[in-house]
Image (cartoon, rainbow, N blue to C red; front, side):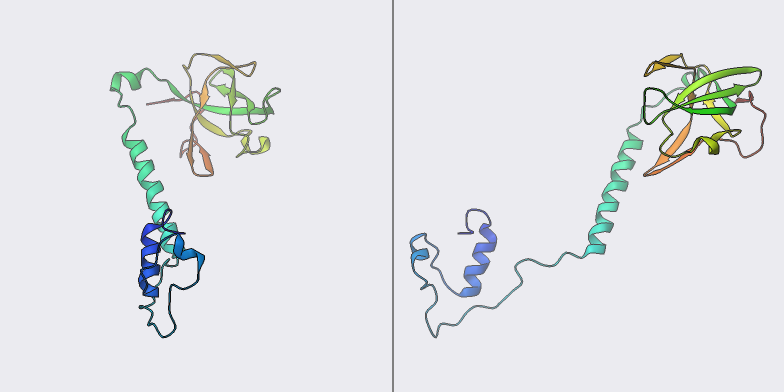
Length: 180
């Protein structure tokens, strides 16, 4: 009965039982092996999966997939990069977005200017952990409305798996400083 679904396994079973009776008619009677007949050598049909080895294999596949994603990133010229204006910003306040569960509305200070940025970082940060932090933003991003709230820039972050980290500077640089 296994033949149509697992032909190789069915063949191995017949070899181990030392029989050639594999027709549908032979299923009507249990006479595939006669008393006194020798059975073939017993072998494992399905080997146990080594959990650790399989997990390493899967992790390797994931790493390879991520390498491919990185390699496929579109290349840009220095002129394209120069169009972006990165600045240091200080987060003044952080409120829940009124129309979205995963977004914050941040009030930021860039030099003498205050702006509002909508950011999808709620899953990783509490509002009190963001206030007075200095982050890197894209200053010259065209303003857009996100779920009905105006956003005037973008906070940069790095994400790996389930971890997210906002981009900042190593030294205490004043807000408004241009990043080059």
